[in-house]
Length: 138
View 1 (cartoon, rainbow, N blue to C red):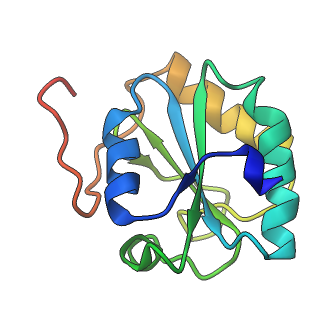
View 2 (tube, one colour; view 1 turned 30 degrees about the vertical axis):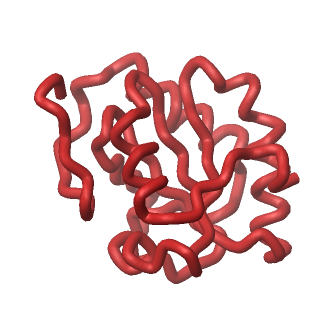
């Protein structure tokens, strides 16, 4: 199902997605197209993407083509997912120290993570992202 979701294949494309996705949650799935866990998550993301299209933009990012982000977000589990809102990294706390989210009950988790910032835009602190400059309007 990874062919149904848009792919970002360079740091520049990831930077552009982070900067240009406004008033929606940006969901970046880090992984590999041929990984069984990624294929399972991609299937769930693809099925959910139309329902969340007004609240979220979902992209697939190959960990081998974006090593700067793989290292920056400490991506050590494949697949992992990182969330942004208005260009700011959302640190999701599910009781473990990682800021990326691995696969489990994605339909509930994705809806919860997507719904919250769209309806409470001021509840997330700013954080640095490598190579991404925030615009003056944020």
